[in-house]
Length: 216
Image (cartoon, rainbow, N blue to C red; front, side):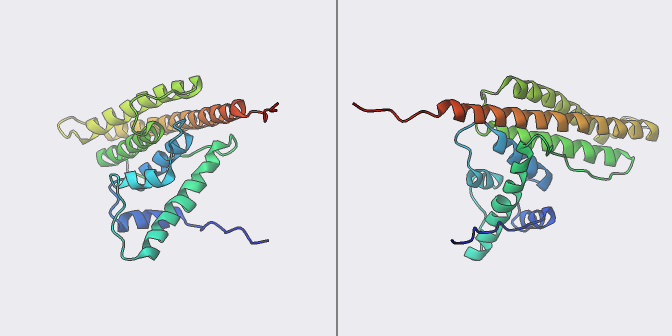
């Protein structure tokens, strides 16, 4: 019996370096959530290859040779995409990117921007090209909460970069602490949405299973 091929073990740092090498316009933290949203999506037309192409606006970057193309696709699909599929299990919740930022206006702006980009990525992956999509009730509620969290992140980002408004260090530190709670809420809702969509998809597959008819 032939041995099953072993998927490449590619670290997040290696994937990040490849995205930077090929000028991906989307940062790694948003790529992660976009992939996860697409993995969970009830859209039957989900395709990892199409999602990878979408990172560059619908067409892959230019490669020097076939090995370079295989390296990127293997890292993104066999590596990152497959690794993210584990979060469809209840025991493996997804975690947003943890970054250390100083308790300054610039630090707060950066953290708010990262959270906004992560949530944008998840929603883009979940909905794909569609403006509307049928979601299970729990996933629908999760999306509503994530929209509120995203709005808070965007508002915080705008306030932080507005130098015309005063910002005391104590207030900034307090807001950064508040973002820890916001992050926890976002993670819980992302996990709930992924589990809800995964469960609904599996139930649909079960209901579509039919016994072989007997012909007379």
